[in-house]
Length: 205
Image 1 (tube, rainbow, N blue to C red):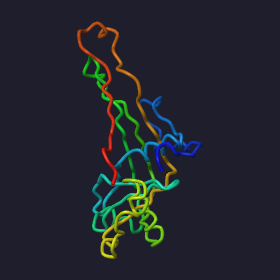
Image 2: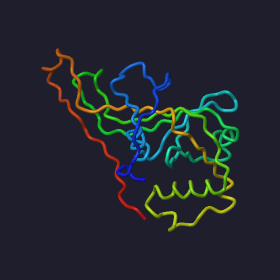
Image 3: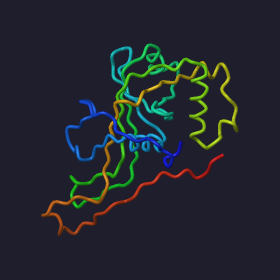
Image 4: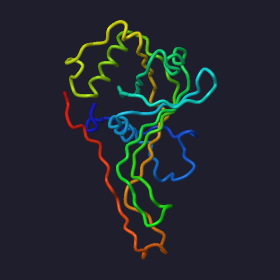
């Protein structure tokens, strides 16, 4: 599903974990805004506590199907193995839209859109659900790409883990606009402004 096709409305319920301590004016709980970021971002990071009790953050490829976020991993990784019985995770995806140059160090910033998800992940074991999810992951590269490439072999399939993360406890935080300046800095002889950042895919096969 592209970012232009997001027929979702409504809001996520605000919870203690999705309520920020600062810059609350930048937060929204609109479902459509969250799904647009997840659909546009090319990767996300998943945080969890490993079997040894140590915290971990892993980058991973993802795809959203309806109200579920699917994460790709390896059955040999701590994420894949831990998911066999389900475990709490936090997932974040961020898109940087601009670099903010201010006249002071303190006010340099970024324009961004980010999503944070809290949930209990489950390992996807149903063969049909796994097939459909892997197909959706490949089709993120380019529409119909799954039909123009070989499907996973039994060995490759056994090496691949899929985690399903329900999208229920979600928040979106974003910054837009130009630099913020202290009144006493306005006349300083330093350049300021916004350098826009875009992500471009130069070709699809």
